[in-house]
Image (cartoon, rainbow, N blue to C red):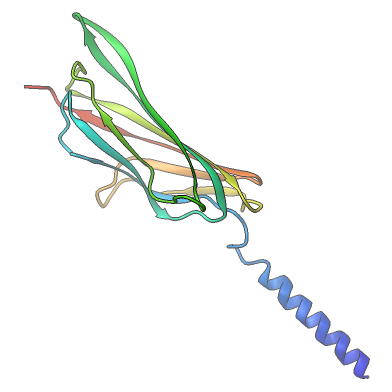
Length: 173
């Protein structure tokens, strides 16, 4: 009888351990996002702008991280309109170095054609340090001072995100 009780206690303890391992925080998952902010809000050709991809909830168990921003603008070159791609990428370690909101400080070229909005795109990729909680993580879209939207995806060995927003450039007076 004592052996049976020990066996039952061991099985119960293993069952509780199994339940504890089902906790959704045990795997990797990417951040969810509020959207983007930019400052200043009135932007003219030649201005410097700080763009931030704002996290609503931090990710979990993420290591090597690559962030990329890009925006194609139209510029006037000697009376001709041409496309110019502005971009910025950087690498960090999300859980080891910084899980701060990704930012891009850029200078809008002086010869950018104003009076229109340009699409700013963002992407991120993380190496998961634990098996990923596979799925799609939708962020909020605009509201409360945020613009655009960012969606994250989690896979077994990596996670990623992508999003965009429209950045209005005013006509230089």
